[in-house]
Figure (cartoon, rainbow, N blue to C red):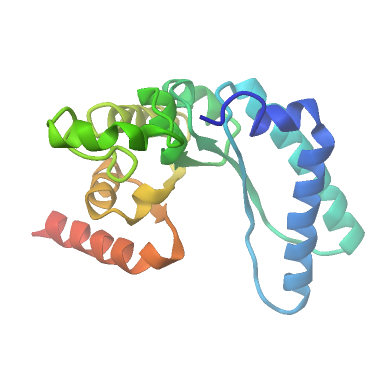
Length: 215
């Protein structure tokens, strides 16, 4: 899988990349705000497993964002949060939440890093696994609740033990899977994000989860 020198690690080694991306986001936000449309950017730091990794990138993002706001003479509120894509990030979520303003579970990568499976080649054996009942479902389509799901639960509990109002969601193909959406609702997540064509399915699953809870 695509691990190693990517995500926040790339930005730590080459901070100008992070600064460039933050500037582009904030300049666009200012331009839209000047058109009379209220915006609220939420900038995510990817693949951070250590609080120090997040803090390094968040500092660059906030410094660049403030420069842009001063240059443009515009006030735009924004948040800097993190993708939870590594088991360590979920386990140490209480530490990361000290400075991260929101979480988004990157369930595609969290599944890869938890199960040691790569989406690049898992197609060579997943059919055999399913046919022989090795696993109950495709873990890249439906969240593995016993493994990945428990890490997510840990991340939610520990993150909110530090920051009680922490907004948490998921980003990945699981966001359009009904069973996964219901599970996310049970965990107390605030939102799901998925591919555009799966949005209607996700909205229906989210509504069903709420109705089942009230029933």
